[in-house]
Image (cartoon, protein in one colour):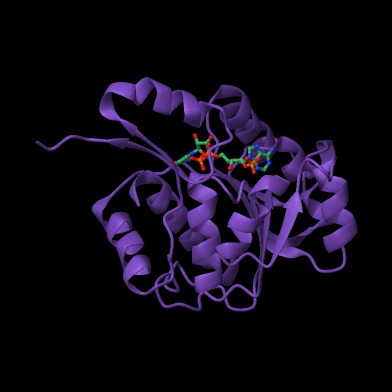
Length: 223
Ligand SMILES: NC(=O)c1ccc[n+]([C@@H]2O[C@H](COP(=O)([O-])OP(=O)(O)OC[C@H]3O[C@@H](n4cnc5c(N)ncnc54)[C@H](OP(=O)(O)O)[C@@H]3O)[C@@H](O)[C@H]2O)c1
């Protein structure tokens, strides 16, 4: 499960804690998201493919996954109720507003790092809902974080909560991820490709394409 599994666990914990006010106690109990409507952007990626399983396993009523049409079968197989193809529905935000404008989400979990998804979120995210972005870096992480956290609504700020989540990996979170596997909540670790250690650079290049479905594995030779 590694970093992707831990990141997905920690995101789910924040959704439960922040949206239900339960301080994260619901994680691992299988129904901490009962009745919730959740959107996962980047549902076919390393983090997203685990996250959608956790959301469904924790009782989310509806999980909508955003990915390309080529990943639809994979993502549906992970339990996602509805898939939105971002290539067909462009701009994505207009499609989300049209489709989910009457039934807003409790949480939008962004594994792609889309500022537009946040800026337009009042059209499909409940006022008390949670927007969590995990994509860091200067342009996708730091600048949006400062702008989204500090700009008041009167000056054009978006009237929805915003969080840039950066994992601090820990044994506790790793055990949470393992518990989800043991409970059958995480059913699949989706593997995009496997590379030997001497091709680690090629593995990284595959990941950097942004097209990997699930995890890119580098094999460590124990002999
Ligand atoms: N904050 C943290 O602690 C933390 C931890 C782990 C990772 N991250 C970051 O989180 C991001 C996601 O990581 P990851 O490992 O899940 O990435 P990833 O595996 O590289 O994600 C690739 C997936 O993203 C989908 N995708 C690409 N463009 C998309 C778009 N515009 N809309 C929707 N889906 C799109 C692709 O699906 P299609 O091929 O179907 O288009 C592909 O399956 C990375 O930027 C990573 O650095 C942050």
